[in-house]
Amino acid sequence: MTYLMSLFMLGLVLGLVAVASNPSPYFAAFGLVVVAGLGCGVLVGYGGSFLSLVLFLIYLGGMLVVFAYSAALAAEPFPETWGDRSVVVYVVGYLLAVGLGAGFFWGGWYEASWGTVDELQSFAVVRGDSGGVALMYSSGGTMLVICAWVLLLTLFVVLELTRGLSRGALRAV
Image (cartoon, rainbow, N blue to C red):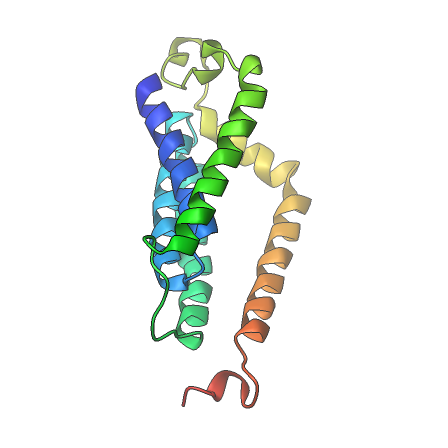
């Protein structure tokens, strides 16, 4: 299980590098889908099956709709792909930054921190994600409201950035 979680985390980091380094929204959408799927795999591995479902429904259902709308308005005739020189420079730079950060913080991580929820199942009275959901809604209620406000603000920022010079959202018509 540790190898599977390590594979999920490596794919998560590589997917985040793919999203951050690509300026074209068409190819970054695939990176977002990969990152969301691998993030859900990490959450399921640590016992958060309900939270992974919430991540998939909210992130892929909500944010990708806004992302697809902005990608449709910001259409490029020749988008940059992952093989272009400028994108490769960004990928190498981000991977070097991740490698340096991992090398700097490597001494604080131990094998015991990779214990998944299945390894400690005999000690648990309730499932791991039921207590987490209750804690998310009780102590994290203000953070949920802040996250909803940030998502709404992100929607308005994306709409304003893709508005164009003359007619707003109707410029493609």
